[in-house]
Image 1 (spheres, rainbow, N blue to C red):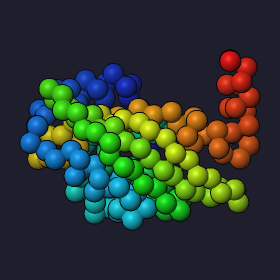
Image 2 (image 1 turned 180 degrees about the vertical axis):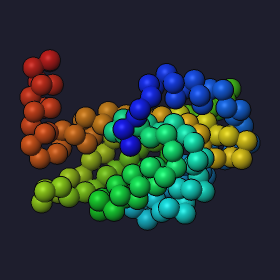
Image 3 (image 1 turned 30 degrees about the vertical axis):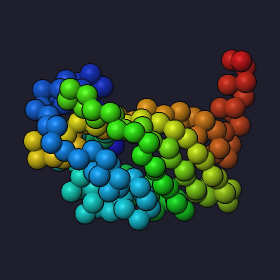
Image 4 (image 1 turned 60 degrees about the vertical axis):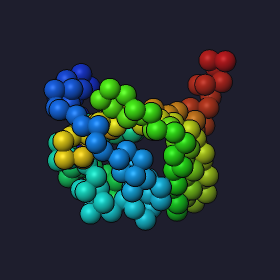
Length: 163
């Protein structure tokens, strides 16, 4: 899942792929993320995302469906519950921007973590209506990393030094 190409290479590749505005972004996004634990199945992921894609959720960057299926099904299995409520869908000239609120409930090393955050996902669809570009914008450090055992302490410490 580690990128072997630069961000600009991915973006250039996707930018040259014809986009469609006939997709149903809210329905498509909700088909996986409304209840991530239940909906992040191989079947749903393959029905939603194209074989070649750019996916960046601020945690990983992925460029193919097989790695995306592995990542999403694994992460869904690790959480107790993750729900995303769609707040707004904005249509651009080629892309859609989905504003959302996420609640994540998970247990790491025996520590129960409940995190709530807001963010936005930029989506682009191909002519078949599948996602070819998915870029998330959210503060993963505050919503996720700061809450982790051990690592969270150091992130909070560094942030405190910057205030």
